[in-house]
Length: 300
Image 1: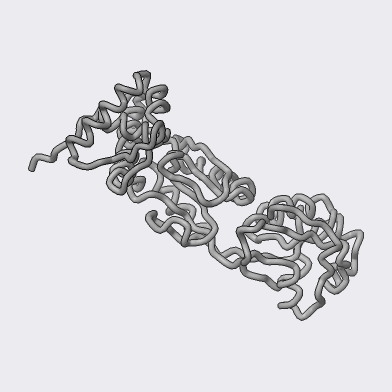
Image 2: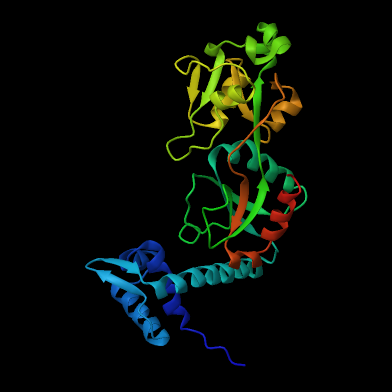
């Protein structure tokens, strides 16, 4: 059965214009004039019988048909590019663009990728640290570690782990505050608590107020202690003996295993949502991606 293919130059011009948001940006990228890009897009519209852009003076916006074509075209062109790179280089080497929520990028994803390279030495990757939401197509992302399952309904989402927090401190802090280890959080003053503020987009993150309430302890004075803007920074302060943080087990796993951090109470408080791996359906064909996903799933 013969499968009709659109003119590839026209498809490339359309994909570039959609990704750059203008004919001028596409022209700069492709080394042609904006008029040439416009003509190629028109050729593709004529071939498909669909209007792909709405035009507003010098701006363009994808139509519904354009968005559908763009998603598939971008994945297809990336696959062709990756295949060409492998053939030309003569080596089956794959580069994955991996995006992650910031604290997990540094404390969990990077160490796991370093470990995975022992299993897949030909893998090359670009690791990006960025908050949800991300644009997979525009930024050419292959795999995303996301907090929560509902950010990307059109993507494949694989639940990875439901992390939890426990009180953590450094051995130095414990040595200076022996009662904290012997008696637990009841012996830790409010002035030594490290509070993590995830920002205005989150209402389900664990707090000292929630943990202490669940433990039947006290209501902490939020005006005391320390306040930081990420889970990673909270662990950094705890590592330096500043105070006690509600540390995520997965995020602090290396420091706990090495004895750089210790827990002073084993009662956990679960995060409000699981972490998950997210990727576009078309990316499943990209070399190395599914193998990496399956390996990360074993680390739950």
